[in-house]
Amino acid sequence: MHFIAFILVYPFIWLISILPMRVLYMISDFFYVIVYHIIGYRKKDVYLNLKLSFPNKSDKELKLIRKKFYSHFVDIFVEIIKSFTISEKELKKRYTFKNIEIIKKLEKEGKSVMVIGSHYANWEWIFILNKHVTKFQGIAVYKKIANKYFDRKIRSSRGRFGTTLVSTKKTIDLISDNKKNKVLALYGFLNDQSPKATKAKYWSDFMGIKVPMQTGSEFLAKQHDLTVLMVKTKKIKRGYYTTEIILLADNPTDFKDYDITDLFTRELEKQIREKPEHYFWSHKRFKHRDKAPAND
Image (cartoon, rainbow, N blue to C red; front, side):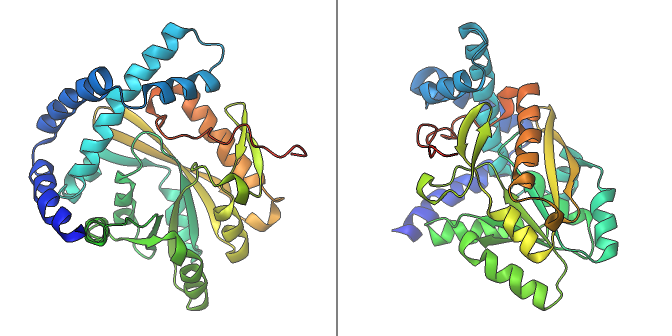
């Protein structure tokens, strides 16, 4: 069944992917009307997330943010589809970097790096970062897709620009092996997912709400002495982004437990408050807000 689904769906995705961006955004505008006005996909969830995050904003302000979010939300999906066939030249034009010198300096020093980001603006096109470095092996940690044919296609698509996608279950072993074999690597993590409440080791405030935090990346950085960088992506205009690279922890073992996680969270909050419509509000970031342990 997985193969049948793949051969029926992927050719359609590919045909859409080769269309010019201006046509893709016309498609996005069409589906925005369907997703937002007709289907109303997760509109209540998005509104609740916004209300929890911005309790002082009026109903009118929250609904305007929600409307802008859905326009951006559909754009992201057509941009993801475009990822299958977009050229290196076009992607470099549309997705630029600020402070890239930080990574180049670490590369010269021969020190592996952990880069943490979030579901803000466009997090998919960041794999072009590997075309700006020469020695790093680019590793993106991702959750494996159930359909192995789509999973393989996504991995090969990202691989065009030097990124190797590694499933979360294989990450720890890979980092250990690379350290043992002295492989210089850049590991990319999305750090704003919500872990299971029962497995959370640390709870803290995010947008004023106590929620479980992802701490695995911090402890891997400490265990393997990985410099920790954060990427903050800003949407300049439709289809154009710039990503600022920020140094969070050069020597992660000098930090107390969870301090790096908190640094990342505070930077993400500042980013969200500047342009809230570009955060991925449709995922249930606050679903465990009522489950925090009493002693936390």
